Length: 144
Image 1 (cartoon, rainbow, N blue to C red):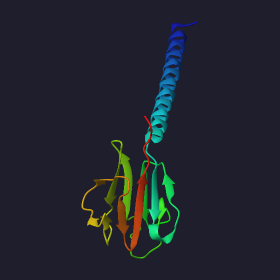
Image 2: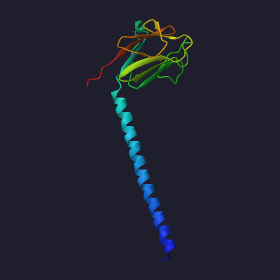
Image 3: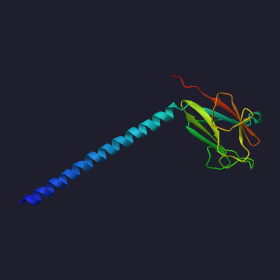
């Protein structure tokens, strides 16, 4: 065998080895990333949203780390009312607490009758007013 063929085989085998190692590292990285996301999802405190509490409607439980409220059917919590923007408000779980923010809605979002101008931390029993609808919040504590 000539030296050129041996060199070519060595280069091909080296590239194949690097490809296998690279693919293995990529698979490990994806697995660690998916594990982190599932772990974070387990740490989110469940929140219950009760639309118009006086109307005997049932509360909806959410364990996602983000809840979009609005008229758009793609929102997690949909309210069909023309006084509500398509994407009106957002609830999100950050720093082990639930937060609420207005998404630039036309009629605004109110927390306990105060207008939202910046994201605010939510507590159990808070009431969000969107359009003509009230949403009562119940935040569940997770045992450590």
